[in-house]
Amino acid sequence: MSQRLDPELESVLSKVVEPHTGVDLVSLGLIRYAKEGWGKISIEVGAITDPYLPEEDLRVQIAASLSQRYSKDKVRVTFTYLDEGELDEVGNRLREVLSVDERANLEQRKPLFAVSDSKTRVLGISSGKGGVGKSSTAVNLAVSLSKMGKKVGLLDADVYGFSVPKMLGVEYPPSVLGGFIVPPLANGVHCMSMGFFLSEDTPVVWRGPMLHKALEQFLVDVYWKGYDFILIDMPPGTGDVALSLGEMVPKSEIYVVTTPQPAAERVAQRSAYAAKKMKIPIRGVVENMSYFETPGGERYEIFGKGGGEELAKELDVNLLGQVPIEIPLRDGGDVGLPVTVSDPESRASKEYMHIAEKIVAMGPPRRYRSELKIR
Ligand SMILES: Nc1ncnc2c1ncn2[C@@H]1O[C@H](COP(=O)(O)OP(=O)(O)O)[C@@H](O)[C@H]1O
Ligand SMILES: [Mg+2]
Image (cartoon, rainbow, N blue to C red; front, side, top):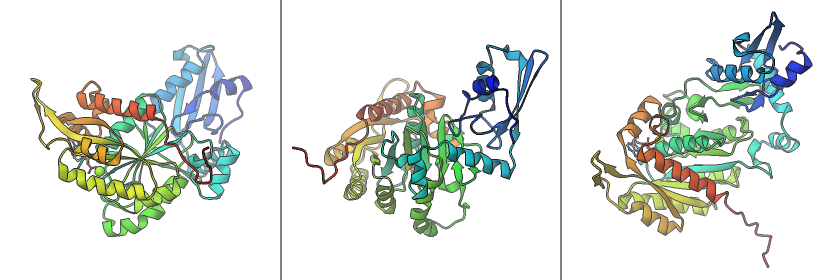
């Protein structure tokens, strides 16, 4: 698919990274064509998604990489889509850049990120019941972590209603590259949803049993390489997902979202205990819809008070934050523009950012191996 490049040009372009995969354009074989002459350069790049929305970013990056030799206006970059055979070839190249350990994982059907020296933290966002703001929390925390410069994936595993792609503003489907699924990017977050692969009218009763298998596939077949965080929007309640997750991702951590009223807190508590039984550490509580503040600064605690603090105490973890009710937060969810993107200075956005900072500062959970005794 790609032509042989002049070695100097190749070394320059091998510093430009394809944003979905995190792998450079040369290693992926995506430079289909490069022609120099008359003081100009024309480059044709293979696009792995359709439409290819990071086009502008990549144009800028390519021009920047060539700035020693050409001024911006002398660099012409065009994008063309790849056919199925070419997409498979990119998949092979994705495999080639894996480490020995990562390849061994693939062979054993384990996630790429589950290698022993992995830096990837897997955060399950859970709640006792629906409607408390679990998905909003997952989306806005993912955006906040990404703003901190982290590479963030968000996996929508809530089979009772896939809402993450819409809330995040995903505008194109994942790519299938050989055996790998590569998530689309939206607002800095790599998003995967089981909803991409199920039709809207797949009955919920089927989705449950499909979930374990589907979750396994999503963890193993998605090209989760080089991620700092993978957030999982979990189905509400106790359940199989925590179990599956605990089995498949030994280092995962759970964050529980609740609203301030005591009843919600009790429901959240039950689901948290279930996670604890699965030996997945619960790392913190996020209280959502904590209050509404008028433009004049008056606060109303519409859904009561104290639920988050109470739950955190019960679970012996920190209450990481209290997110207010904000209209842009709801609107943003409806139109695919998270409040942390549309209005980063709002109280809710700042609160999400604080929570993200706390999660980063906490670091991954410590793991004790039972056979190791500390003297
Ligand atoms: N803090 C908030 N302020 C305003 N609206 C919110 C807030 N949190 C959630 N919502 C809205 O409430 C609804 C349910 O939230 P969602 O995140 O989908 O909950 P869940 O995933 O727990 O079912 C959505 O319409 C969402 O936009
Ligand atoms: Mg949801």
